[in-house]
View 1: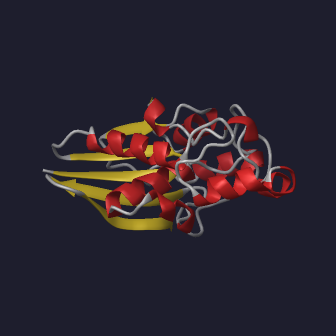
View 2: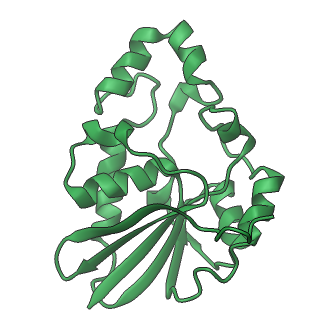
Length: 196
């Protein structure tokens, strides 16, 4: 009764290319939407598909040919008042707040969501998935992928910033009745030579 899930980080947006916290909702960078289309058929053996509620997740899922259901549990980390800013800008204008956020997973000086709250939200989502045999795909955000890996490994939220999940990478988890296991992480979804 194995459940396998692949978490796919959405394709890049103009904001991610500029290393900014995402705004309210934003579309994919057109070049990256085109690259995601090259991945159609790569995830053809999945039985259930989910996605974050944001436009960038919807567009990535559509480009991959996935008929994915929006799930609020897969939403991006809420950056609150920091939407649209860069770390460099925050370092110049709010260095103490930025330091608190980067070192204390319970801190949310931006008025949004803390890293600890994100990890708890993603853990609930994973633990509520069906226990029967399934192959699930979820198009989501790098922060959600990081949170899922931390939960799977039983690592503390303090380790959040030690993980990375680039655009259009895949992270595989599995569960066979008990705990989640990390199968592989960080692999590009689009095989070399298929991206335009």
